[in-house]
Image 1: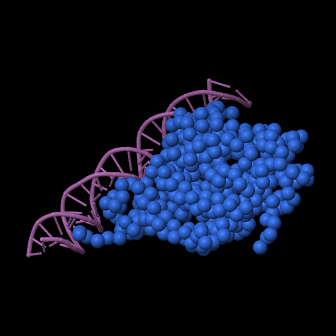
Image 2 (image 1 turned 90 degrees about the vertical axis):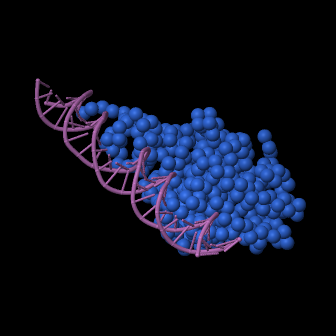
Image 3 (image 1 turned 90 degrees about the horizontal axis):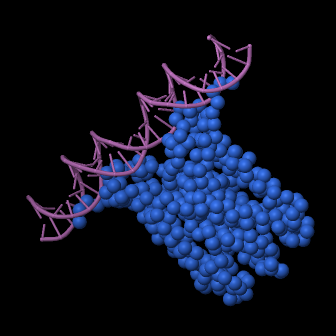
Length: 203
Length: 203
DNA sequence: ATGATACTTGACTAATCGGTCAACAATTAT
DNA sequence: ATAATTGTTGACCGATTAGTCAAGTATCAT
């Protein structure tokens, strides 16, 4: 009961839009309110701070994004194809964002995590949590690929950290150089990376 | 002639210190001035803006850092050893920074580039330029490694972009998770990455 | 010494920031 | 209807922000 509202949703919409395009630090509460057409009093009715809003917006983004991951990483799909799927989806998403914003944006969670560092615990923890959720999909896929003999056996955790670091690094490069082409064959590059062997003569 | 000063150097010191620890957006001109013990009038005597200071500070940092790169990537050193050198130096630097700041910081240039995106042309161009300078060392090393049969032949530009993305990605992960151990064996991981083969049965 | 130059200082703006509040409006259970 | 609840509004606060400026100070060439 009480008055109904979707101002909180509009605020999260605005926050996500702005956070994709700009840095966390350069987005002000006033900016978000203006874009959402919500007065600041209402902002503080729903959210305790910009950090609070960011965390809840990330949560909502995850709810919308997770089903796509479930589809891309469906166990019925051969493991290496799952990985190709998610790489191609990453590229496709960057193409979409490029059309919407006029430039290559990269990954919000990575950019946010990089910017926040350890200055805002709530955001840092949320970014860690979400990236870890994504990681779990990779872990299953890579483990399945190892079982199928498609990826060399060995510490799955390490392998997944590496392949995600590689993918995230390439996307970050694409953002810095505002160059979509750099990740157009992301799936191939990631596939090559996963075929790495142990050094023949280890020290 | 005229009054002498090292206020500009102190301002660059302060800016670099703060930029390593915090994000560009969260460091204010007042913060920098306070840390450098310089009044704002003097700030604007030497620098046109925070962006201007950042660019010149990065330039000075590069002047101090370049000799180390020259040493690590000396042509007299076998190519794969050059790469091990720079990976180990990266780790060692992160250990040092960890002791100084109390947490894992990652790479300023990458963090800065990620945060700035395309919002400040001068900083973006400087970061691009410096990362490209670093890249040139890798290009020579990888090309030499290919000549020696230590790395598979193929597009050097692509290979270097990939290996740098990988390394930068791992360092970014270490920062996000505030976990030095993740990059303690950076050299091994990078070595493995460079041993990747082309897929046996390409689609 | 003196004048030109280069740097410093502190006081000053105007704008913007995050955050608060009391009064008001819409919704619903009773 | 009305009371309780929930959301909205616009004015307001103090702090901080980037940036300016005139007056003062140190340094050096002559």
